[in-house]
Image: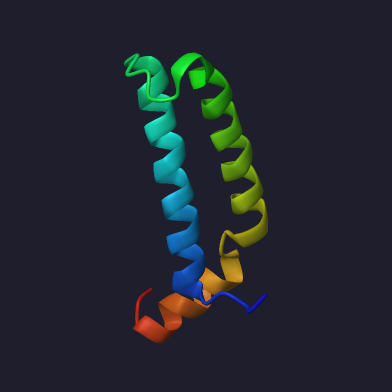
Length: 73
């Protein structure tokens, strides 16, 4: 698997976060998009989010390097 760039990691985590948010909204607002498995889908999305964040969330060093390249503090 090719190494993800800084922005690629941020996009991957962001998309996974949006999916988890939609699953939560589906469960809380009772939209019924997943039938009788709404809670299971929501839990699965958060397990996936935890895995993605553990594996691909940019490290503190990557954030610092990005800030230095962009000229920020």
